[in-house]
Length: 214
Image (cartoon, rainbow, N blue to C red; front, side):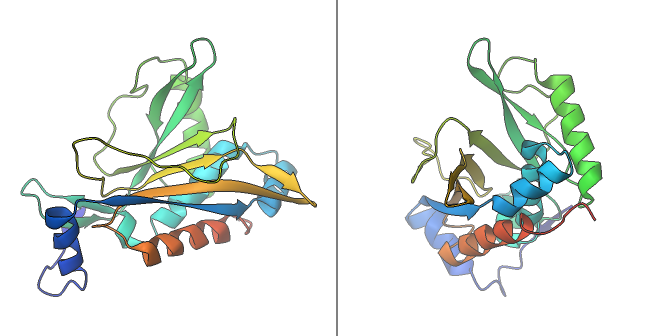
């Protein structure tokens, strides 16, 4: 379900109007996640990193309204009840990628099996959209597993920044017994300020340090 925001009572009304009408800007914020406990947990349980991490990110995204925003047909802002991850798979033979998507469930095992099934079914489908029928209420997550970076910027020429988050993470590396991984959130300033994006990153860190299979 999509719920229109009450513009008369919305505390960010002026901010939304400013960043959609005056300065149509977005931003990317990169932070380092500690994935040491997460890696230990998934290895103990023989789980795959990608669907496990996408679940944790999806849980964090769905816990904050600022990252579930969209526009009605009339261009009015609103909040989705749930947003679903659109993620990429890499084709080793021609070095292209395709987007897949999976309906989010707050039950870890249900989501994990659904995503792994989707990847098995559609991973060899070439083209930008590897799985048809992507819902309107989605957010993007992708990986750059070949590189551990310190900054990343996603730009869209001649267009307003997206209200939904674009999330990218890189290669994790070990130092002094701890494993760190870069994570970047790209979002329209109309949807979220630095405060909200900091909350999201901290929520993701929290989700990857708990036993999410119970």
